[in-house]
Image 1 (cartoon, rainbow over the protein chains, first blue to last red):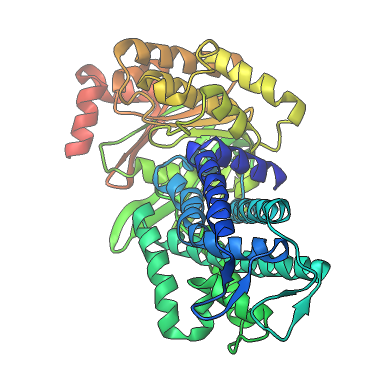
Image 2 (cartoon, rainbow over the protein chains, first blue to last red; image 1 turned 180 degrees about the vertical axis):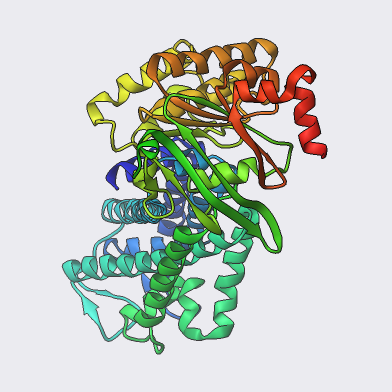
Length: 256
Length: 248
C-alpha cells in the first residue's frame, strides 16, 4: 500500500502541472497578502467586518485564496490524478501489475488528501507569518460573532480550527470530484460537472452550500451563526463519494 | 491439479464476454505450457485484446475462468499477476518522466522485488532491451520502436514467468521487428519465460512460436503446434490457410 502511494505521489510531483500549481499558488497567496494588508478591514460578508490584525490575518487570507483551491487547483489535481491518467491510457501501466484496484484508489485518495493538506498548510503558514511580521497585534480579537472575544492564543486556535473545517470541505470536494471524474469520460467534462454539482447542490439544500461557499460556511459555523446541519451533509458527501467511488474502482472494467 | 495442469502457466477455461447483446468472446478455452512461445492470432475485432484484458484482470469474464500458475485471476488477481508481465495495446508511459524513472516508478508495484534490488532490476531491464544509454531521456522523445522496447523492459520488472504481448510489432520498421523477435527468443531461451504474443505478422510468429491459438469472431477456431499448422496448411502455406479459416 505504501509503495503504491509512493509511486503515485512521485508521478504527481513529476507532472509539471503540480509543481507549477504550487508555485503559482504561493505567488497568489503572496499577492493576496500584500493586497489584503493594504486594507484596514477584513470582510466576513457584505456587512460584517473586523479590523485586520496579526491574529486574524490568516483567516481572511484563506477567504481570499479559497476560490483558487475549491474551483481551480483542487479539481485540477483530483481530475488529473483520477481521470487524466486513466483516460490517457497511462494508468494501464499500473493496472496491469499485481495491484489491488481498491488499494490503488485508496492510495490516490490519500495522496490527494495529503496534497490538499499541503496547500492548506502553506496558506496557513504564510498567513500567520505575514500577519505577525507586518500587521499590528491586538490583545483581543473579534471574529464574526462580536460577542465572542479572543486573546492571541484563542485567536490562533480559532484560525486553526477554521482552516481545519475548510480542509474537511476540501476532503468532501475530493470525494465528490473523485466520483464525478470516475463516472465521466474526460477531464474537461469532469471539471464542468464538478462546477455544476457545486452550484446545483445549492438548489438541492442550503446545507450543501459549503461546497461552493466554503469560507462563508466556516465563518458562520465557527461563530455559532450557521443555521443548517454542517457535519452530516459534509460527511455524507465525503463518505458516500469515497465509498461509491471505491466500489466502482473495484468492479469496473478497465478498457482504456 | 493433474500432471498436465502443473506445467500450464496459463489456462483459459470456457471464457465468454458480452458487451450488451454483442458477444466479444465466446466459450474460448486454451492453455499454454511453461517455456513456450504461443502465437495468438485472429483478424481485427476477433476478440484478442478483449481476451488479453481478461487475462490481465483489467476486465472480468462474463463466464468461465482464467488461471495463471493455477491461481484464478478473477478471485486472486494480485497473486495471479505476481509473475506476469504484459503489454496491453500500445505501451503508454508517463511522458513527463524518463524511461528509467518510469521503470523505477513501476517496479515499486511489484511486491516480489525488494527495495534494495529495484534499481538493479531496472538497470538490468534497460540493458536487456538496449536502452541503458537513453534511459535518462524523457519518454516523449522516444521513437515508437524505443517505446516498444521500453514496454518489454517494464514487462520484465517483476521477474515474470509469463509475458503477454498485444501487437508488440505495431508501428515497428523491419529492423525493429527483427530486434523484437530476437529479444523474445533470447528471453524465452535464456530465462525460460513463456510468451503469449498477439500479432498479425504470421511469418514473424512462425519463426518464434511453438504453438498457435487462432480465434475468429470471439471463437476459438484452431489450436495446435507450429508444426501441426504447417502440416494442415500444406503447400498453400500458413498465410493462405489462415485466410481460408477466416473466410470460411
